[in-house]
Image 1 (cartoon, one colour):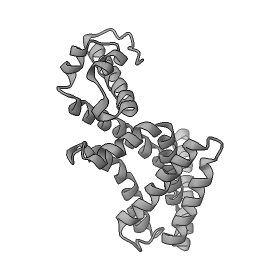
Image 2 (cartoon, rainbow, N blue to C red):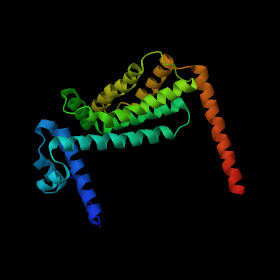
Image 3 (cartoon, rainbow, N blue to C red):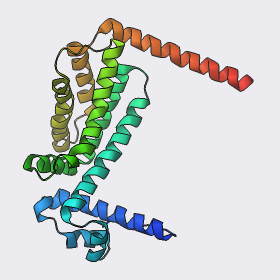
Length: 228
């Protein structure tokens, strides 16, 4: 069951209840699907009255939209944080692959539920905006690589994107079924495939060297500032 914290203010209490409802709904939707999920069951999981759920969300579809939005927005923040930890474009690509695969395996059931609801049309176009925001992290990264000369856009971007995410999504199923297999093998191979298909090896080396120089300059500047 989703446990409520012990917040002090009225606003904190309301936010805590909403988080509990969203967490409970995510579990209920994952386990039972949209059609079979019950608002009463969600309320029970969240340890609130069923009427309380309706104070926050008018119906099950609105609650679904909120759950999906929260999940993919949090994922987008995590993906951006993972890529910002690196300066080198190829390192960013591998970091995004590692993050995406790890999260897919961790939240396998809910990601699968999201895919199914998209296929059945339960999630309409506006509801898909948070997912599009997440996918855009790859698009921005790849275009940045093209601008730097690290990548070459030798196919439509959607084809390149589907190769990236499609490989990781299929591999997540394998890793979900075979717990002893290593995710590192997937992300390392995918990075190598990308460099073979779309990479400009000389530019990639230049990009890495440039990032090393920038990092050293930043370190020197920090030391100078510290002495001032």
